[in-house]
Image (tube, rainbow over all chains, first blue to last red; front, side, top):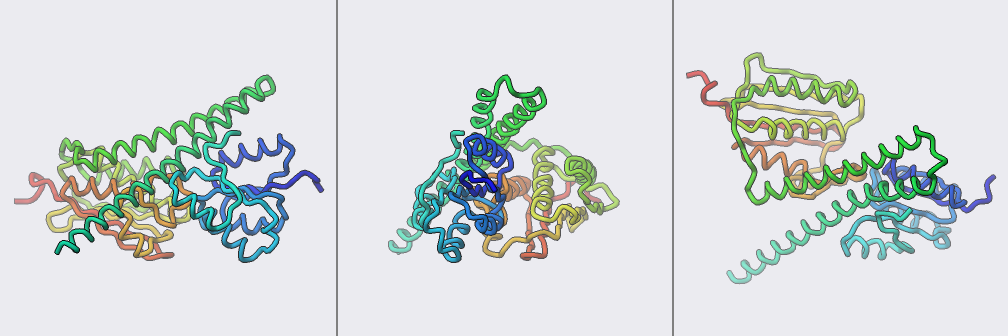
Amino acid sequence: MSDRPKILCIEDDVATVELLIEVLEDEGFDPIVATDGIEGVRNFSENPDVILCDVDMPHMSGFGVLSELRKSAAQLRNIPFVFITAYGSRESHLQARRLGCDDFLTKPLDC
Amino acid sequence: MLVRVQYRRHADAEREAEFQRRFVDILSHEIGTALTVISGQAYRLAKLSGQLTPNDLNARADKIQNAAERIEAIVNRVQFASSLGDGTIPIRRNAIDINAMTRQLTDQVKEQQQGRPIELQLCPEPQIVEGAETLLCQTFENVIVNSMKYSSPDSPIWVSTATHGSTVRIAIADRGNGIAKSDLSRGAEPYYRGPNSKGMSGAGLGLYFIERIVEAHKGTIFIESEVGKGTKVTIDIGQSTESMAP
């Protein structure tokens, strides 16, 4: 079993996911990938140390993922939840803050 | 009376602000996602230079190219939407056989979508309308591609043509995700993307384009849809008067 910190990456864009995996592995992390919100919630069982989550995704949005995990996973309190978002409007940022995300990474990501 | 006018102005301003918010969100998302790939791959290319095989190098160049094309496509669509919005849509009308156009278009889409089943049912007589060939072709292609996008890969798409009174009727149907009633009524607003389109690339301009183009041809569009069952889009465009029987 790897002792490298696990990062759960929930992102539906294939090219972005490939890049994230490459960069995170290179930086010494162990990426766990989910390509939609539902898979992201399911993969939370792999006990990530950090969650990076896109906002606009099929089946369940990033906002949905955070709400769902807040309801069902008490341990989320101790795990940083970071939205990867390209949404520029103030309303989208406020909504993410209201849901209790810890931080934002804004697309385009600086890999 | 004054209250009603003020209320309407307030509602219009709110609607305008909502369009603007959607526009910023969609553009930021589409362009930001593509730029992440471009800048990330450029950074990796610089970092890994010397270690990459020619194949790896080509694969990364392709990813950059695809991401750049994604940005170009969205910019083109927004520019076109803007010309539709200000009424500057250029229409040069020619006589078009909708049957021939539909056959050619479905062949082309099948080839692009690697044999995705399309069932074509064409009226036996030529179906001639006066219109802008490229715009009409884009309209039908947009509807067909959307039907494919929102239905399972093995599920067929039905395309048919028929004479309906003095119009040519083109119907495109699928057994896909369907559209909720509330989204159906908002689908033609520019930059509106329903919950089904989450995670799909696009600008939320598809139905807006289609309606404007059909309108410019003095045609009508009718959409029937049920969530989980599918969608049928029916477009009627007036027959060319020269092709109509005396």
